[in-house]
Picture 1 (tube, one colour):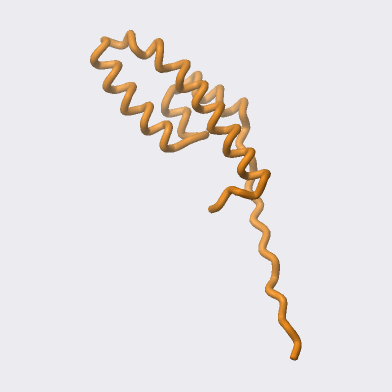
Picture 2 (picture 1 turned 180 degrees about the vertical axis):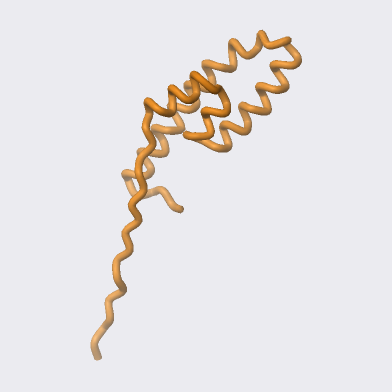
Length: 89
């Protein structure tokens, strides 16, 4: 009997741009983070609302750079997983 080989399926997914990720986060804060990490964008969006209200907006000076760093790390992590083949869809 002949063994039938299953066709190999290749999923081509583009990597995320680090520059776009950082620019979107600089311009839009947590909303821009949604490009690189959805969960991170939602978490930081909630924190922005809470901390922004409690500190009359002064706390956002601290949170904004945290968003930028988080977006960059998330984009780098996504790209590494994608290239190494660990990323599941």
